[in-house]
Amino acid sequence: MHLSARAFFWHRDTEENVAAGRQLGQRVSLMSKNLYISLKGFFFLVIFSIFHFAYEIFPSPALVPICAVNESIWQHLKIAFFSYFVLNLMEFVFRRRSIQNKSGFIFSRLFTTTVIPWFVFILWYTMPAFYGRLEILLLEVIFASIVTLLSGTVCATIELNIEDKHFTRNFKVFILIIFVISASLYVIFTYRLPWTDVFVVPEMTR
Image (cartoon, rainbow, N blue to C red):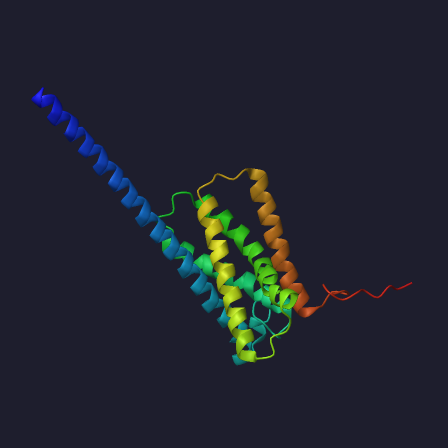
């Protein structure tokens, strides 16, 4: 009877230790994920800023396709695309040995690179939609920085949720096509604007 009681309490203590270890592991994992998300958002803001001012500081024709050449919304969407792509390339270089599902990593990053300009677009236009124009330049810069940071963290969160998945061939083809088309549009419309704009009513020609 005495041995049974000892076995019972030992088994209970073991289960409690296992549960405590599992909870600790989950907390550590959550902390590391949150740190990853925060760091990726921060580095996206840094690289985005570099792409924003690079051409202004070094007006080289080689920078025109991927850097901002004016303050239009389209140019900001373009540098969001290319700066996040560069950030993902850097991440792959640093993490390539620890990545278990390289296909999942690559296509999750191609997907977020394609959509991040539109997160920037949506978040930035919340200010004109719900408040109006910020008359103070410093406030506008702060708001734009917050939008950029949030867009990076949103995409990092998406990546953590889908990078381990095994995407179908059709999905991969779709991502590649949209990615290539997006890159093409950002470059083409830097040199030659389309005949109509997003918010401008097009003139009807007969």
